[in-house]
Image (cartoon, rainbow, N blue to C red; front, side, top):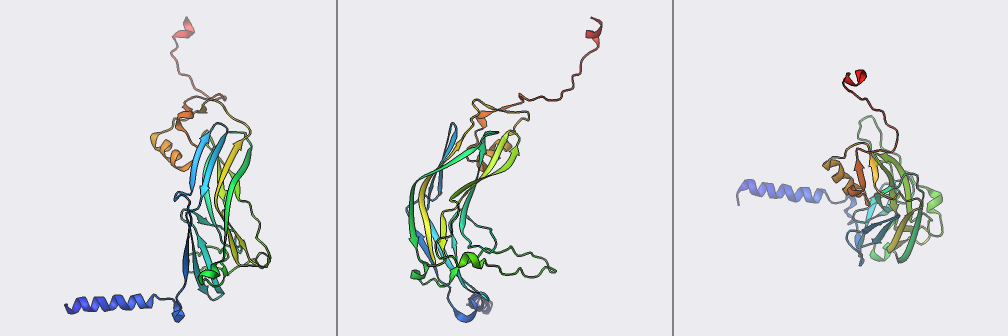
Length: 262
């Protein structure tokens, strides 16, 4: 082996050892496997409602050690961490749906299957990590203060939260959009356990149904329709009639002067 290649190999080994967590401690992690679908969410859009079949395929737990103590974080593929600062950080699934204009909604949950896990049985030390503010990458900005809601962490039972919430976002052309948040994990600080919903059926029912096609004054380009189809669970480009509106619109009519003399 040439001297240059040996030198490169030695440097790589040194880098690998230097990346090991400080203190020489190996941080544990564990993956829980379930029988759910890897996509997590199966969607069926029907007249007057959106049906969602949620299922969990896996959940990862990993240790975190910092100057504030020992913690563990929980993650699920395709989910995002919750953002309530100081509260236990839990994975949530966010999706966007279209809602008929002026309609209210009712959320129905059924066929719930759950499981309780205790990370300490897998040699995961610490308690669930609290959600923190994002680090601002500016020289003049100091490191964000570590925050934890002591009241919540002193709770003896499961911290109660809504399993499914729907929040209105606004209107995009002829579409009323709302964000659906699914929270499948709850935390019990008293026992340091997690309660997981491994599968459930969700129905989002509209109390006012707009029969027929939606109306849009603006023509929808193929790129716009493609983006909407990918981003909105129940978007159907076939329901949109472009260039038509049942609302008053301003128009300028340009015509020849001949009709004035006829």
